[in-house]
Image (cartoon, rainbow, N blue to C red; front, side):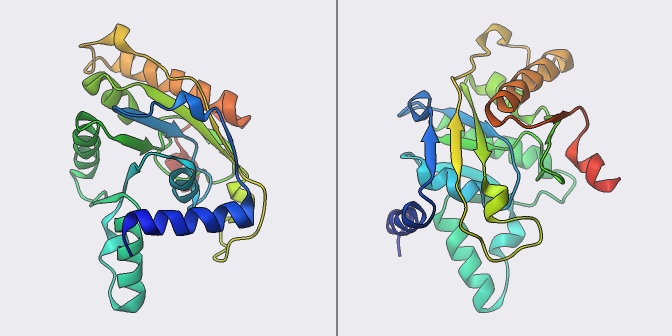
Amino acid sequence: MSRIALKAFLGLLVRVLYRPRVEGAEHVPASGPVILAGNHVTFIDSLFLALVMKRQVFFIGKDEYVTGRGVKGRLMAWFFTVSGMIPVDRDGGHGGVAALMTGRRLLEEGRAFGIYPEGTRSPDGRLYRGRTGVSRLTLMTGAPVVPFAMIGTDKVQPRGRGIPRIAPVTVRFGEPLDFSRYEGMDRDRYVLRAVADEVMNEIMRLSGQEYVDMYATKAKAA
């Protein structure tokens, strides 16, 4: 089954079962490079985002998703590949650089690139401090950042639950953020921090989540 056919089938299934509500879709450019930056509360966030979008959205994912063995491994590899996931070894010493360069290449090709600035799923449903990868991408490519919020996906698939539940889902997009005023300053750490904080502030406004000024990875480790 092709990527287009798979998306059509899954999109119909999601619309029938979940009837997802989409708000602010007009804020997403119909063409050209765009960074979609949102909160990350559960594993299936990317699936819902991809299925409510008219454009194909590319994400960075762990290469282990497409290197599994056996029937299950092959099915996962097929699903993630046709769904637009780009596998990257993020556990290696250069994983972060590889992910950043892959995102930059996709944006320079005029694609829509999805990113979760928190860097990992929220451990408790709150919104955590954003990392500066999103800042580097927008400043290096000039692509606008469209913030979005996934609302209700944590009820569909709570942490530790394998089989999704039926629950209302809302995908809410905000107005594009333009950071052209910082052109040429992608190496300034204060600028990078300011851009990331502005993006996270918009995500917080859209999602209504409580904000925690700490990296989610540190919260998980604690």
